[in-house]
Length: 169
Image 1 (cartoon, rainbow, N blue to C red):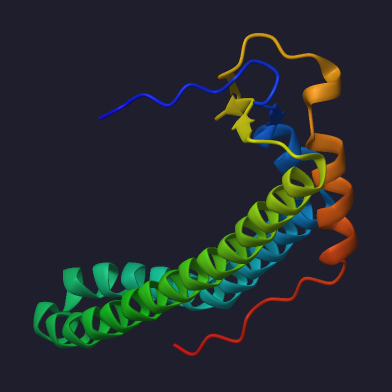
Image 2: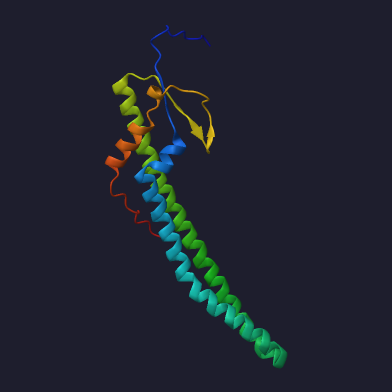
């Protein structure tokens, strides 16, 4: 493999702070809020059923002391309802995961598109992520080389009303 030498002054490099983008972008915060709301709704839907099942479990435990045969039959039916609830919870988790993936992919695709557009306009050859998982991957960069503010502004102007995808179970 032959090395390609780039003449000095022709290579233009910029950075984007991925962690700052996630924290400061209204679009990323909107996605986070949507997902938290969906998780809360799913939890609120399951909570009353779970409460009823816990109460029933205690009743069966008490009944077992007085009438073990009757408690065994009741416990068998109880176990079926618990399994059904667990299946319902798994389906909800899978649906939430699909929604999260879709929203994440949508925003990430838009971020890449925006970075490409800005890079082409400014004749930038390489864009490096300045931070990864809240750890610096670039030790020093001149402020003029940081595109983060531009990317945030562009992203937020394009994704003003991000919506939750309608994904079937």
